[in-house]
Length: 328
Image (cartoon, rainbow, N blue to C red):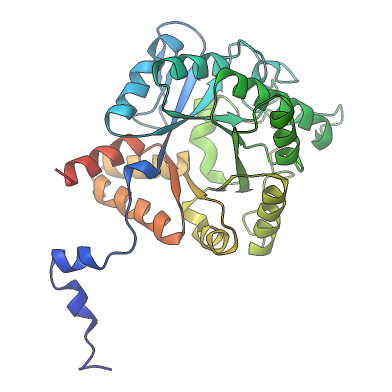
């Protein structure tokens, strides 16, 4: 009790504060998202995500090089096809934009960990993550075979990790079985296990051209007000079906879910610092309302403190650079 116990002794100076820190952000934890678009000589800025671009294949390696040069070990690729159709056929085409991107990056950077987002929404003309019935229902079971086909095509191109983001029931098990059957038992599955129907995804849908053309995604993505128990049930099912990594998305508003996930499962937990979270920070910083570096590093530290092992973030290159500068 006070005055014998004085907690301020742990905060006396920076050296002592550093000695007792428990939550530290490391470059090795960072995963950098990259948008790949068809065409030539394309570097298209995304207005709602300052500093983030869509890259055509002839510019892709320039951005990958930027990430590698600051020590980032992993990227995740999202594709924007030139043509879309109701069944998202470019998602699983051998020469699809993501498959081409994976092969190009793999050839140039054989040791880089390449994660492939596995979903149909960027490739379907209706913008939903699954097949759609004539009545407008999102069809769960018929979609699974297409997701599995997509995963196998991405593994064949050279992906290390497949990240199904569709939130169809049973997709992890279907993908795992398909990968094993196709001869890719060492390709891991990073499941979007607790993915919410969030308003924070707006800028991503601009970037990927994946906004639903009708309705919303509330029948398959989780309700933000649903219980922690539901998130744990979703995650438990994914783990039972073979998930190697667990994503919580969004991250910033769902730190309670992240902590419970960390406490309940041994698989690595991934915080997805989504586009809307990124955009809010960039907008406030552009107006001079906040110190961008300090705010971003505090957010990253919060993810680690909540239990994240890995952080998927559009801030990744900046964070890695700031960490490099701090360690000089």
